[in-house]
Image (cartoon, rainbow, N blue to C red; front, top):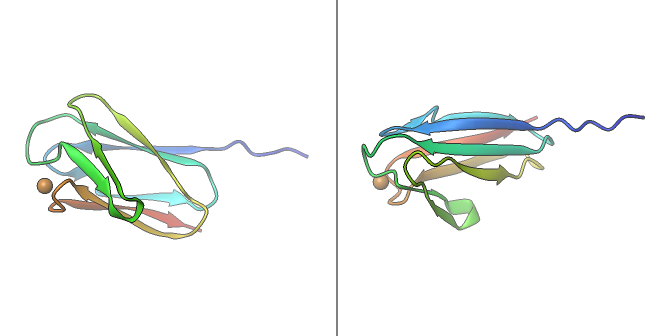
Length: 93
Ligand SMILES: [Cu+2]
């Protein structure tokens, strides 16, 4: 018997918006999403996951990595600190 140790990770570039603004992860596979803010354009110096009550600073050129719960399929929205610029993490079977 072998145990899969697969993981998945994606990086979102923050440059006046989120690129890409939607990322899709496979359900049940441990996952991280990294935000890499590379410009001071816009108001994206914080990211929040409202469903998780999580607000985190995104220092310039300092990638910040978040663990994503992939145990259930669904969408996990995120936005800038003021809720003006939006993206989402989609967990899909
Ligand atoms: Cu904003």
